[in-house]
Length: 153
Image 1 (tube, rainbow, N blue to C red):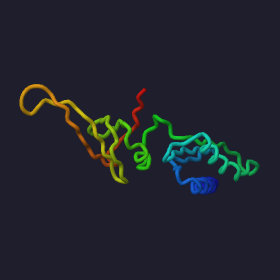
Image 2 (cartoon, rainbow, N blue to C red):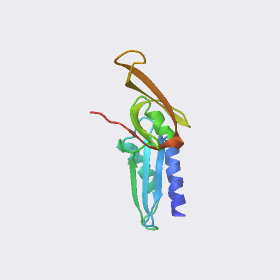
Image 3 (cartoon, rainbow, N blue to C red):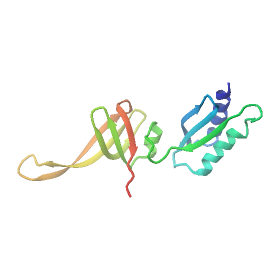
């Protein structure tokens, strides 16, 4: 019952902000509410505060004791949803599948898969030496074990 009430309030807050989307939502046994959000153009502290207020101000602490945590998906948090991949097109990802780990540029993302591109030095087919070859691989979301944005300083 309490979880359904909180989820309805959360959904209402997100309806007003279509640029934000839910990554995870949990309500623990001790009524600890944890909401993790992301946004198509990133997410700010104010965005988290607005969603937190939309939930907290509509619940009565006299009726039920709870704690509320609204956070953003961090820069090093693994990507989980197709919408997160779409917002990171053009960035480098480290993608781990059952067969391999690839660090490459995210070229495209659909609702079913992603396309990665990278360059590699390979021996020339004829003669001595190496040449640079551009590789491309399409990976289905179902094959991805973990994917993270690679941050370089």
